[in-house]
Image (cartoon, rainbow, N blue to C red; front, side, top):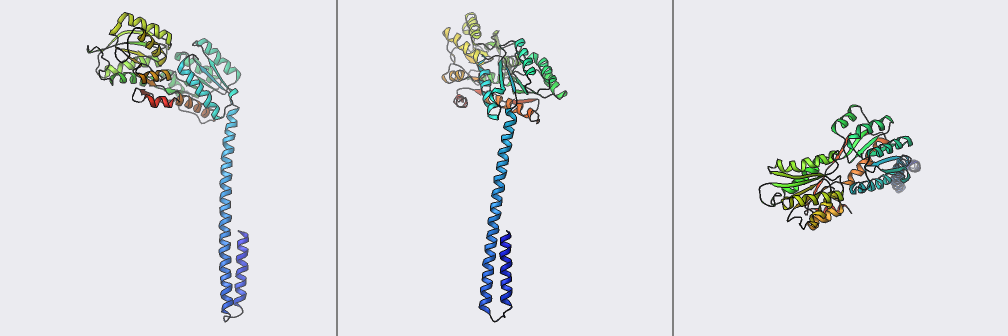
Length: 384
């Protein structure tokens, strides 16, 4: 820019000198003017070039600063320690959840060696000891899938007294506990779906059938219920709201059997086999609180010589790969997609917000999705 201004100054001086020789020297004056105009244009172009170069340099500097900030953020997370407690590794859904959680945490910048995921083996005492060990080892944040939701208050107190932020996943503490987090301004949140919605969707899948679940045409839907852990709020809500969806729609129901399968495929197979032996073709719908138990129920149904879709309807929750394959082939009437991908990512994001001081709402929810033959291919595609 300084060069451009110097050229303009020299040009102006030349014009002044030529003008002093007299107005009769027209050719000289014209030539000088032309030279000045050309010089000014060149100076303007030089200024534009210099401005463009400065703009480009500024943009490059901004990009470099952004990348540096991102790298700095990753470096900060790399040094943070995350403790993750899973109620039971053998649970099909929680296996999908924890694997996705591990992968996503690493993608955010956490070092793999600073992510510790432990198996509670479906024993609250074991999990409580694991939490105490995490606190003693000085983790920076805890993500907990409690064995018993009823233990949440004790867990919360242990963790918050150590000034460690806490993210609950999958198994929701009760409303009173969640209200306490807000009242006492605790760094505690729950990430998951509302189990009432999943139960309602199971009932809606039955209602969408042409006969609304009444296979034998006697004016009522006779069902059996296979529950998960009776202390788990998800099991309670799925049990209640699957049937409530039917009764709210004016459908008469009859419960032939209600048993606890503890989320386990083998237990469910045995329970459904016993129910079929007792009630036979009177059973029109088998509600299972999760897909693992639905898989066990299917084994019992097929062993009894019955066919899903003809003799009985079968419902689950989670949208496990095998369950979705069964929905597609007609071996399972439907399931409900419990989105482990969005939930695990939201849990990790919540942990990061606590670590960076941003904070979270005390409830971070997501939606379930009904899965039937109409959309099962889309769900399978999303599962990869």
